[in-house]
Length: 456
Image 1 (tube, rainbow, N blue to C red):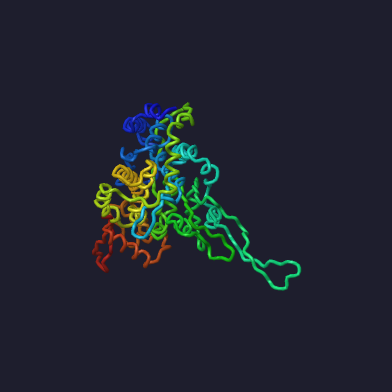
Image 2 (image 1 turned 45 degrees about the vertical axis):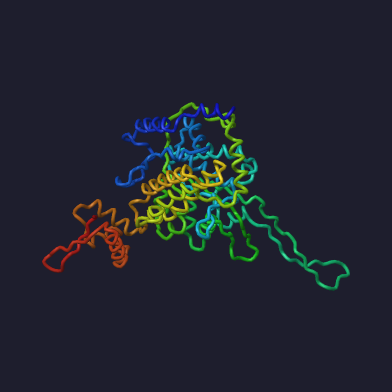
């Protein structure tokens, strides 16, 4: 199938979104999609659809092509395809931010309900164009699950050479030679799919576990190693992660601000849901995609030797105008989760540029990246916006919002069955007051004044 014919079959993204919105409105559960549940507060609504800017270039064309035949959320298709392509590109291209190289490896969390998020469907469809474009990547560079930090390192380990004593007949002097004891992994690209991200989050909380540290270093492009004799080491690894989880599990497992600062903000978040009901669709066949595949293959080849990629003048001016709003983050868990906004934007812009086979990031690439980031931030706000990242403070705030007459300190302690100390309660209340989320009021009781707390 020729490229022109493929494009004729692709509907406009606006038509697709209108159709999806109409179908979503007809769903049950009071007109809301069935996977918008999860207890998010009303002030943080379900994120609006991705802006049209996000559907730039080949990635956008593939989403449009799949649109009529897929129940998957278009955002899930797009973000996972960007992650897959960015991994296939390897480390040959990078954006230089001060002294740090940002390569096109992305970490993405797809958050949707178990029954209707269509997370697995979206991944299979999103990765297929890249699989067709790069057979070695398809066969050698995809892995399922993050069993442990050590296990991840093993998948991209370096060659290991040891100095051993060589003995031969008649030799009185000892001779030592270097010998390859492990050939290592030649292709350091690794696209990890984690269908049970909640299990990874639980592992990361365990004392002594290095999984979180290894994933953080993998995102940053640093050397991966364990300080243990004869342990594997991985340098020049190019690791990308696509993880699936429900919103409820994500809120439950990723609640600590310290963990979020060091781990969660490496990820882009996408709240997804079924876009439509297709009882008997046959899906999209490889023959339908084939017209676009040669361009993807060539883009991957060019990326391998691209080197440094920078903004052109116009895109640089646009990035300068957006920089402050990207680096100024809100307080609480939401601010921690979105604390690498500028880094995520430049990586996304780099991926869009490489998809186009471009040597520079232009305005269209940057606008696409900003559209994806804004959607990710809106998803994070829906998921974490009501949380301060402090379980005690979050529990108190929820109770205060349910109590228009306020709560005394005694009532607040009763929330925890008196299993929290006065010091812990005082610290949590101080945190709420500093963020203007709650305030105290003194009440006369005829004796010692009582303190009653209210939600702001």
